[in-house]
Length: 514
Image (cartoon, rainbow, N blue to C red; front, side, top):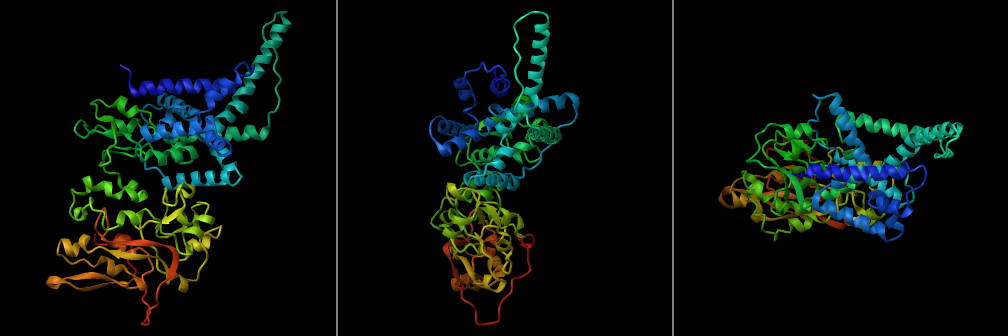
């Protein structure tokens, strides 16, 4: 029976052999048209070519994108030559170290997406150095051209000399030129890195350093088909996790991080009970927690799982009148960003502010700023909130997208305003006291006022709100918050209280009682 794994190996082998043959064609017998057709499906070269011209490159970009949106990152396992090279290394590793497996390890998406953003942005602005350094097809070509091809030419010439000395004909000498020492060193270094990473942790390069992998990882988050664990057939043997070369299967929690999956289908082929499957991803299907944090525009789809827990089902996810879903489609620009127009114009998505942010409220966006602003930082209040007196993001921003502001001025920069929906609040629905939003508001723009049956309920004074998101982060209702920040397109100035200045409380997200 033909399995998905068999199809993957067949397609990958054909693609790998054809691309390798093109780079090692020392006699130039392969017609240029054939070579162009073979390499046209390589994603990064196609994207770069599309920027300057249309045609087959655009068709290749569309094809690979659609393929990923349908089936996930099958490009990485079937069309990428460097991916196949890693699979060969993994196969050799298994022969050498039979008992060493690849246990689950969470992918470092923040780093991967930062590398991807830097590669894309620098290429758009005229410097493809980083993209050239990390792009898989180019690197595989350099490995073949500078490391493998010269020895083949040397062997060919040696045979030609030998045959000529015997007065025979058949092999011609081929000049060996254009070989640069630094290119050889760079190719050897990259090959060493690939071998080291692959032997250590399988397809780590694809989920850590590869810009193509980063783009396809983002697309695969919304793919229609994905690999899932069938809970009724799974016997918790853990075999799927041990064979996963992308380390994206957590057999303890019975979850598959599909954004990191490279589509090798080893898990499906190795499962003894048909407990792994390639299934259609219904819109009602719940996203994993890490996906909802990054794609808040899809929060309303997560009701199926959240309905099984206590406080998590108090908000009716079919109801959109609260405006929460629409508000989360618009990014909150960090303090010092002045507003969306200024921030988008100057931000290069270097994510330096993301890594420097002490509360990690700054997170790379997806499409909240539009396609041109992909991975530009946004305030993600599901993750955390903005410290009342912190100005680090403006201090580290290298482009001026986030301008430096004084600490005392920052406390009155209004990033957005708060919206409170009483119908979603615990006080209204459960008739129980809460007050988490008021407790964590540094300006006391949210205060508790008397309500029915000796309860208290939030009341908003938006003139004092700075949009820090502490109230939204503290609110225990999910997947839709009863109180949330609606961004200001242009930052405004909050009103200063005449009474003594209120300082932010020292509570941390881990200290919330919910």
